[in-house]
Amino acid sequence: MSVFKYNSIDELKELILSNIKNDDFIKNVSSIHPLDLYKVFETLDENQKQELINVIPNEILADIISYFDDEEAAELLSLLPVEKSSKILNNMDSDDAVDIINEIDDNSEIVNNLDEDVKELIEYNENQAGSIMNNNYISISSDMDVKDAMKTMIRCAGESEIIDPLFVLDNEKLIGIVSLKDLIIARSPMQIKDLMDTNITSCNVDDHLDDVNNLVNNYDIYALPVLDGDKMVGVITIDDAFESIIEGMKKDYKQMMAINTVEKDDNIFKIFLKRLPWLLMLLVLSILITNVTKIFEEAINQVLVLAFFQTMLLDMAGNIGTQSLAVTIQKMSSGEFENKKHEVKHIFNEFRINLINSFILSILAFGICFLFLLFRYPNQDSKLMISVVISLSLLLTLLISSIISTILPLILKKFKVDPAVASGPFISTLNDIISILIYFGIAILLLGLEI
Image (cartoon, rainbow, N blue to C red):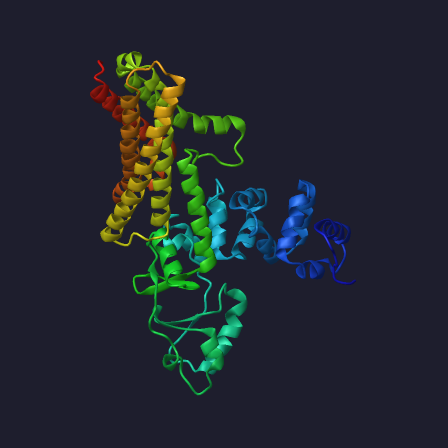
């Protein structure tokens, strides 16, 4: 039988289902890219999936499942016998296997059947370097001849996630690295110690993922060695670091929208229950804003037109605050704040930028409000002074909003609180309260209103 030839996933699906009982089925499936097999899996019903799982070897299933989302993979494996699930996980890269295991609710029995290298990774916190490291790397000794090192690399290449670089260990202590290019060019007799690079950038197994990602990004490292003291225990590849960055961005986005606990597979009732506490908290804060506004009810009654411009003021404060907040969190995530000097420089830069923006917007607001009052409310007293109140209030609220949105995430980080928590609805509500106090406070002072 010839190798499967197909032009679409639908054609491949038909070939797989129609040839599943043929003798050379496994040989044909082995020649197909795992991504295409994953796409076929997505189109199958439960019985067809089960039939394929029973036939396809565990090592191929491991490659297919690596394309699943962790939650989907966990759901699929939880339906299989423990022994088979464990064998599939043992054939996966250890870091990918751990991500899936952590999504399985009752995983104790599966964990007991896993290889020791996978079990070790489960112990690390999800924010630690150890949680995304892989212990499938190639190690050599410094007294090896380059010819023997090449033989070791060839022998171990099939079981290792990376073959470049090779890590030089002395009693499990990392003492150097050798690039594959240098090893290929080198000629025997030459020992690895004469070829290796001893200028090594590494991280500790307990380091926070943000610090690890910054190392990978700033030093352009394809494979970052992970140490536990002096002992090398794993390696973090650039794709592992990139994946953790994406996950961190998703988490920050959810936190900014106050939906961090909502899972994509939750039903409507579960989503309702998870969102409700956040909405109730915001409701309380909104009531607080209403009560703050009520304090100035008498002042509003004296100059009703003030209420008309309140929405504009709050919206503009929210907009400029969101911009400053987004820039600050972005720079924090990319590791640009290496020390206090960088933080101070960022605060000063944001202040200067927003001072210019606020000044220009306040001048425009003065002109627009004055013209609006002139043509829309020709009988309104103190048109000029009301425009001054709006212009000055806008200037101050925009400046203060931007300062709060820039400094608050930095303060929270000092107290080990995720800065994204301070985002979205919370910081907007805080800016609303301050904006109302500034607006009506200035109106009372400049217009001589009573409260």
